[in-house]
Length: 422
Image (cartoon, rainbow, N blue to C red; front, side, top):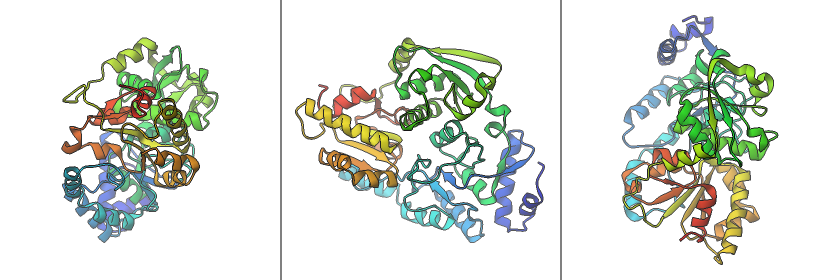
């Protein structure tokens, strides 16, 4: 591994033995993937995926103490994925007791993150790139992030450069200020090995399209055409759409970067020049999307059970999405002659986004209609034995993939939560 003078000094222990171990770990990580040098991080902030204080993660807490005591704190402030719990989110007594035991280290871990350099108490979100949160990298920035949906958004929509790092390695990069140069950091690694032609008769559901593409291309980079029929620029609606689309490609497959013809930064600049030699082609039409959804397993013990809870927002919703869902729910409730939702519904967003929305007329109206507004991680709420047996519905393909939640398209979910579906 070729190192700069500063990087070599860290490895030699000039900034402490703990920091030297961090650098040594990153070098080993890079060499595993054929990297021959380290590159400096240029993004202003980091993002960590590990946000939850699980009682069984003692090695993580021991490591964090070692880093803090050794002075190996982050060289940049960072945001973190959402916490797993909030008192407003429905849970019964048994679940409450279980959660208290399961996440008994949450407060202690939050204090460790504060010492290591978290941006603020509002920086717990998987959508750290929202304007309200303030961790929005620039095109070309080199990042040390984890969290699959954040990484794919930063790479694709913002044009930053980041590999799909694991938890802890994201923090290690922020501590030493550099990461191994390979994969999605390189021009060659950002070439598309798939041409995906979208030929549907109407705008496809973001979650379904992302799922179909992710399961086909897996960890490869797709170049997607046909989306300019519905989007002329990356405005708020488009960014919200591709946020959800990207999360599905990353969770149903392992996509860390996608290019959208005429829309995403590198596709606008280079067009089909981004296609690598020997690329493969995948055509997505209505039949492909129908088959994709039809093949989703339903793992409820009682497939005909009445839903007890609905989650909207995994990844976290944007302000535009909160407003759109509020209007849709209000209209649907009026149409069905109801004042409150028929299924307990939780909508999630970043703390700063959520708190601002709660102060609006739409936010107050939604709360009055029985919707819970929260900034938790629905995945970490659901991913345990006590919630796995609950009949939970969602329009998130990521949540469907990792938990027992059952997927429905947005229009179907809307009817169910507002009392229109029987």
